[in-house]
Amino acid sequence: MNVLVAGGAGFIGSNLIDALLTEGHRVVCIDNFFIGTRANISHLSGHPQFLFYERDLSDLAAVDEIFQRERFDFVFHMAANSDIQASAKDPVIEYRNTYTTTFNLLESMRVHNVKQLFFCSTSAVYGDVQGVKISETYAPLMPISYYGACKLGCEGLISAFSYMNGFHSLILRFPNVIGPRLTHGAVFDFITRLWQNPKKLTILGDGRQCKPYLYVKDLVDCIMCFKENLPEGVTLYNTGGETQSTVKEIADIVCREMGLRDVEFHYTGGRGGWKGDVPVFAYDLSKIHAAGWYAAMTSDEAVAQTVKDVLSCKQ
Ligand SMILES: NC(=O)c1ccc[n+]([C@@H]2O[C@H](COP(=O)([O-])OP(=O)(O)OC[C@H]3O[C@@H](n4cnc5c(N)ncnc54)[C@H](O)[C@@H]3O)[C@@H](O)[C@H]2O)c1
Image 1 (tube, protein in one colour):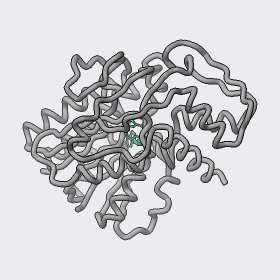
Image 2 (spheres, rainbow, N blue to C red; image 1 turned 180 degrees about the vertical axis):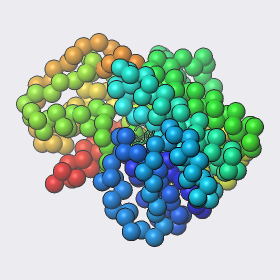
Image 3 (cartoon, rainbow, N blue to C red; image 1 turned 60 degrees about the horizontal axis):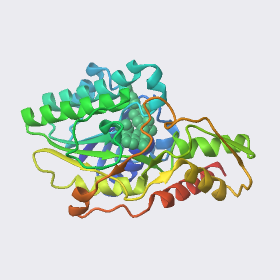
C-alpha cells in the first residue's frame, strides 16, 4: 500500500512506520516537529520506500497539496498534542493540533477519495469513571481534559465522514503507551528527574493513581493486525492490557532498573497528578479479546522494559 503516517516523527508514529516499512508498504510521513523529533526518523533517511514532508497539518491547504501530489490507500493519523499538561494551560494547542488536524485529514480524504483510516483515540474520552471496567458502550462520555474532549470530537467527525463517504475507519482507544522513543509521562519524567537527583524523587499526586500501561510494540502489532480487511464504517476497540500499575509502583520499578536504593519519594498530594488527569481507570477488554488480540506484556513488564529502553538510548 501507499500509506500516509500523519505525525510519524512522534513516539508511536515512528515505531509504526518501522513496522509498515518492514511489511513492504511505501510510507509518506507528515510532521512539523511540534513534539516529534528528526532523531525519531533519522534512521529512515535514504530509505527508498520512505518520504518525509515537514508541514503543519492544521493548515488545510498544506495538507491538500500533499494529497494532490501523492496517492494514498490508507491514512494513519497519529498527530495530536500529546502533552496534556501543556494544553491544560492553553486549550488552543489542543484545538489546533488534535481537532483541526483530524478535520483537515478527513476533508482531504473526502476530496481525494481515500477510504481507509486509522485513528489514535484514548481512554481520556471516557472522563473520570470510577468503580467499573469501562467498555466501548459506556456512556455518557464526559471527558475532563481538553485533550479528551478534542479526541471525542474527532471520533464524532470520523463517524460522520465515514458514514457520508463510505470510509473504512479503525479507532483504537488506548491508555498510556510507553517504550523506545518515549518523550513524556511518568516513566520518562521519573528517569530524567533521577538522572538529575538520584537521592530524591518528586511524584505528582498521592502515588496511588492506577492505570494500565501498554508497551508500544504491543500497540503497533495491534494496529498492524486490525488494519487488514476493515469493514465499511467505524470499527472501535478499547486497546490495552488487563493489568495496571500505580504511580508508586512505577517509581519503584524505575529505581530498581536504574540500580538506585533508598531514594526518598516526595508526593505533591491530591488524587490526580494535575487538573484533567484521570487518576484511576480500568478497561473492559472483552471486545478486542473476542477479536483475538491480547497484549503480550503486563503493565509492570512494560514499565520495566521501557526503563531499559530509555537507559540504553542514553549510553
Ligand atoms: N502516548 C500515549 O500514551 C498515548 C495514549 C493514547 C493516545 N495517544 C495518541 O497517539 C498518537 C501518538 O502519540 P505519541 O505519544 O506518539 O505522541 P507524539 O507527540 O510523540 O506524536 C504526535 C506527533 O504529531 C506531530 N504533530 C502534532 N501536531 C502537528 C501538526 N499540527 N502538524 C504536524 N505534525 C503535528 C508531533 O510533532 C508528533 O511528532 C496521538 O494522537 C496521541 O494523542 C497517545
